[in-house]
Image 1 (cartoon, rainbow, N blue to C red):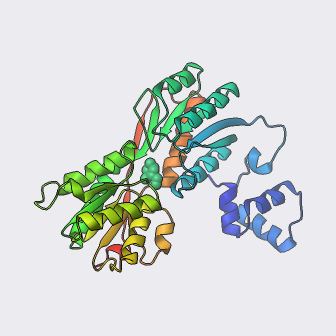
Image 2: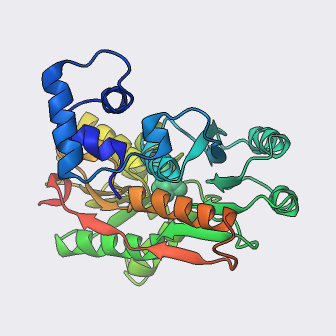
Image 3: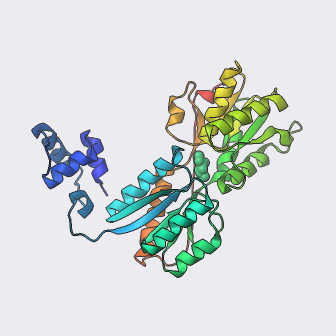
Amino acid sequence: MTTIRDVAKMAGVSVATVSRVLNKNGYVNKDTENTVMQTMKELNFEPSPVARGLAGKTMKTISLILPDISNPFFPELARAVEDIAQQHQFNVFLCNSDNLEKKEKSYIDVMQKKSIDGLIIVSNTVEEETIKKLQSSKIPVVLLDRPFTNNNCSIVRAQNTEGAQVAVKHLLDVGCKKIAHISGPKIVNPAHERLIGYTEMVSHFDWFNDSFIEEGGFDIKGGREAMKRLLISNPDIDGVFAGNDLMALGALKELLHMGIKVPEQVAICGFDGIQLTEYTEPGITTIAQPIYEMGALATDVLIQKIKRELNENKTFELPVKLIIRKSTKK
Ligand code: RIB
C-alpha cells in the first residue's frame, strides 16, 4: 500500500509538503503541487485519514520501547513501525529506555494508565512480571529483536546465529586464518546467539581459544576497546567478526590508528546493515538484518492482535543477508 512517505520520496518533497497539498492548507508553489498531484496519480495513492490530517478521527495508539536511540539500528526500526502504524491510523509513542529496567517499568506504567492499545518492546531487561501485568490488562505485546523469553508473546527477530556463521565463513573464504569475535553484551539475546554462531564455526581450529573473544558494549567505544585488547592478546589475528556495526566501526578505528591495513592485514565484518557502513573508508562488510521488515512485521502483528484478528502467538525469524564491501576484499 502506497504511503504518504512513498509519495514524498518519489516527488522529491517532504511528507509535510504532501500533507499540505492534500489538505490544501499552507503555501505550496504551483510546480511542486503539480508534481505531487502527478505522483499521487502514478502511485494510485489513497490518502489515509492520517495523511489527510482529518480532524475528528479517533486515533488509536501503540508504544514502541527501544533500548538506545543513539544507535542507528533503532531509528531505522522505528521508521518502519511508524509508517505501518500510520497506515492503520495508529499513533506511536516512542520511548527510549537506555537499557534501564527502571525506566522501562515507568514507561510501561504510564502506558497502562493511558490504556495504550498495544506495545512493541525491544528489551533485554524488562521483567516477565511486567509483561504479564500488561497482558492481564488486555494490552497485547510484541517482542521485537531481543526476546528475553517466549513468555506468551509474539516475537519478531532476525536469524542471528545463522548470520554469524555466514560472517565467519565469508572471512574464511577470503583467506583469514585466525578470526576473532567482538561480542555484544552477552545478556543481550542477539549478541549471545551471534557468539554461538561464531564459536560453532571456529571452535574446531587448533589456534582457537577464549582469548579470541572480547565483549564490547554494542557501541563504537566498546568495539574500539575490545579491538585494542585483541591486538594485545592475539597480535596475529587477520579477521574480526564484530557483533554489530558500531563495534565494527570502533574496531576499524583502532586498527587504522595502529597503522594496521584493512583488509590487507585484518579483514572486518559487522552485523546489522546500518547505512553508516556504506560511508566509512573502507566500506564495512556486514550481515544486514531486514531492519525495516522486522519493524513493519512487528507492527502488523501487534495491530492484528489489537483488532483480535490474530489470537495465537507466533515467532517470526527473518533471514539476514551478507553485504560485501572493501573491509573484506583482500
Ligand atoms: O546494534 C544494536 C544491536 O542491538 C543490533 O544488533 C540489534 O540486533 C539489537 O539487538
